[in-house]
Amino acid sequence: MKSAYSIVFFLLFLFLWGTTIPYAQKPEIEKSYAMFRTEAFGGLNFNTNGWGCSFYYSKHKTAKVKRLYLIQFDVVKHPKEYKIYNPLDENSKGYVFGKMNSFATLDFGWGEKRIVYEKLRQKGVQLSLNWNFGPSVGFVKPVYLEIIKFDGLQVAGIAVEKYDPESHNLNNIYGRAPNSKGLLELKIIPGIFFKSGFNFEFSSIRDGLKALEVGTKVNVYPRRVPIMTNVDNKFIFTEFYLCLQFGKKYI
Picture 1: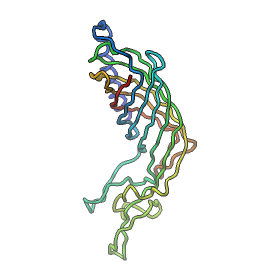
Picture 2: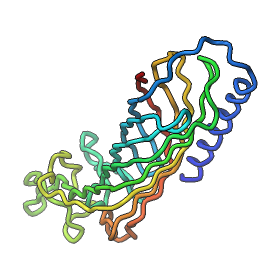
Picture 3: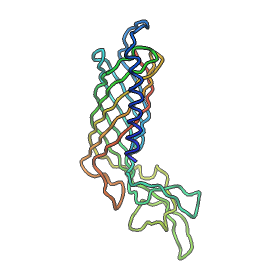
Picture 4: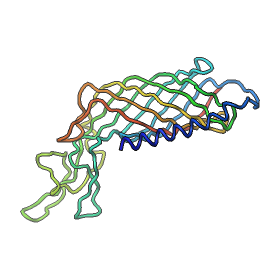
């Protein structure tokens, strides 16, 4: 699966890199304007560990270098997660057998956005290299399931219980409980992260911002995050990501 993501990202990179070459060879013929000083933009992230969203704020240091601030939220999935359903009831909610906890991260970063190739025309593509690092907060929430209760051989009802690998199995799990269950038992694991990627900006509106970013991100925590039972859980999470961004520029 990760190799497939890598191939997709690599092909996107080659395609968008190629689109910058014709514009880089043409002289500037459009009217000059005052330089924008700040940018605010957000995006949806799709990566090899899950999905999330991010918000950026940037401010010019020089003509080609911007100070970059980031807040990013990601839902992280274990590579061994596979959703299954109760075969006796098509209305049951899917669940991941063996999953003890849900895991999500909230990253706070600062870094730089460095322009590699400028956007010489309004309909051109600008290539930048971004990097961010900073603290990461990991949120661990226990998984609750709907469990079938028996009275002898008869079904007595369904109860919501925290997943227990010793007593819950494929024969008595009905489905996933509401995601709100377990929020009061949330635990926090502090860590750090580093993120770097190529940003392709292609907005045709002068003060607008549309971009596609591809890159890698690494989150590191002081201990293994207990997501699944009977498998190796990680404390280092590496991902390849693709992020579609929208925002606005300000003078």
